[in-house]
Length: 384
Ligand code: ACM
Image 1 (spheres, rainbow, N blue to C red):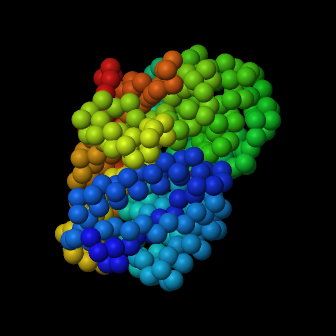
Image 2 (cartoon, helix red, strand yellow):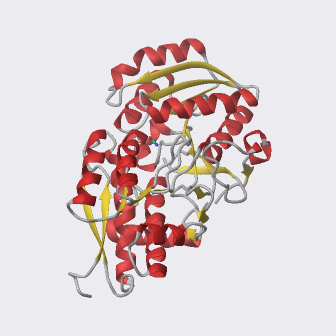
Image 3 (cartoon, rainbow, N blue to C red):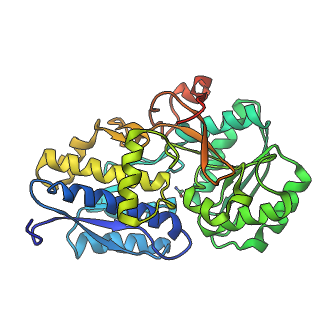
């Protein structure tokens, strides 16, 4: 393959700073997909070439580096971002320059851009099944703890409404800075001890998520009796928290490393062959992997890296992902996804307790009646 003549794509995931654990896993997912595509001859005989910058988990940097990719490097396809605040920096830049931005992260919803492909879950795909599970399994009194930025505050607003619809109650709501250390959680844990909620809903992200679970364990034990539930806490973070502290805690996500399926087996084998370990395979890593593969299929169909043509090819596309079948919704650029609930077992692995039977249509504005449709309740499946 001629190395000079490549399809260059921009990559903006942080390998340093507070969200680097999860963003490194997203970077790995994207790079793995690129390797797989190139190993099969690339697209129309040309390799995909990643041009990757590290924004250092600094929100403003994502916008600056998106501008650099587009203006200096002349690249119009970008994969990147974990925190919603960083996505909000990139958004006006890709819109102004008509670039195509792939965002492989769950988020709070209430957004649409023709220049963004949203690959992570929206609240109807993860908050609704989680609220049902918590209220059925543990009780209706839930305590919210979050990092202080847009995703936790908006995600909590949606979660509060969902819980209320099911007769639940929010008994506390607190926010911590993104760089919160263990000591910052002391008063919150005292409040939890005093309030005695049935479960916690955590939107604490990055390194401070590890600090929160560790602080919780020191005073209140693991999650078997009173779990911390989350939409973000993932395999890589559980490995850092350690099994003793993490057992019993809950995450709702489209993908878990522990899914037993042929497509996931192939994905994990391929990941291990490239990176030597699967310890940091997460749902956001899988989302990045899927989005790169879907982009390559669209590129093969179009034969040119043109934003408008690629968008047309992507809308409605289905893909057999490690999580199961997914599809880009032509109504809103978000993705139909699977929905599962995993509980950390005594080996530190997410044991999948329930799964919704079909991929769920994304409803970023929560306009459809599904929010009231308790058939979204996850089915107990004993497994995959
Ligand atoms: C997030 O900030 N969307 C996790």
